Length: 438
Image 1 (tube, rainbow, N blue to C red):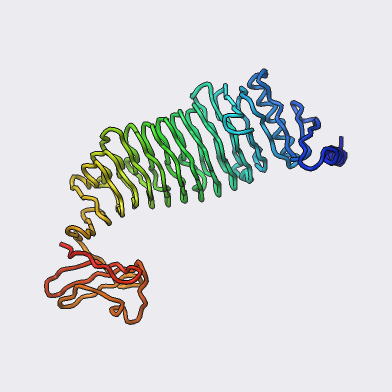
Image 2: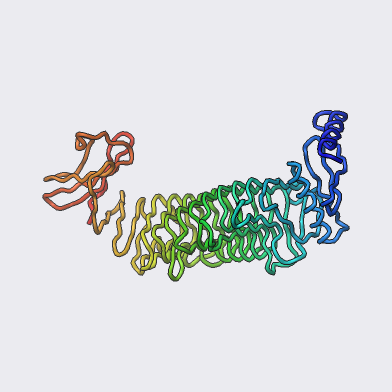
């Protein structure tokens, strides 16, 4: 049957059943290893998997559906049911959408070793663009050498509404760019999400929304080659270790609204024996124990770590900053049943609205107690001004004769009579001045 004849048949079937109909007609080509069905109303190729078929047979039928969809521009549907299979791959040049009937409704059980789903582009291009995977569950009969989803050299893809259970690695994300993971639940894996060192360009940007790692050995490992990652929302409870981040090529990683609950060991380990990330931020995360945990965040190496609007419950130490670590900024954090907020190589720094540490220097702005600043560096610029004078204790917009201060601008105020120094922040209506630094 020619392509034109096929299109006429599909149009006729669609008109006969009306708009939104789901009639199917069988179609095959010489390269198919099994028959597939094309739903005329939705342009969908239905993979003819069966609960009675072997794993290799079901994989061959999924591959045939993918080949037909890739040729015609249709989507692939894997119908509801639990099926053994031995894995399948997206075409190297991508451009196929594969969906199940829903997580828990379509369950693919990998009975072989290797990846359950592979999406690899070619080294010299193309980089497997514009594919999607959604609405199904990936299970495995063994964790040995298995990955739920193995991605390399892909771009512009979307993965959503997926359960990945009982693999060695849930999601193995190598160099891949401009991609989105949404509503992915990884559970009972040795490693939930792994971003390994890659010989290719670092991944950027990578966006994850409401993605989880439950009851796994390690929730997330970021080894290297990530330059822009935003992870918003997720439950990482019951894992042996939360997140381990190493590698000098890790930059601009932001985690927000992540639930670190009942982690057996440490919640976050930043930096390895010789390398560490730059620009790691934890925002509005929850660190919770039902029994006293030793250290929540261990900061070993890296250029900078920012922790803001987070909360800790039941720890001996919230943040342990080792002498080899870079700068640490902590703002507006809450702690309950925490003995030490920051242990900076044996020096305990209490929780305050603003804490910044680097090397031997610590800055602590307190509005209830004593503020501390061992060294002040305030070169005048667009947003910072150094103001001094005899008896100088306050600041106003009049101290900026040629500028118009805005909320968030800062100033350092020095009383030359006593040597006292204060830090000031411009609010929406006025300046707020701290207690004097020691």
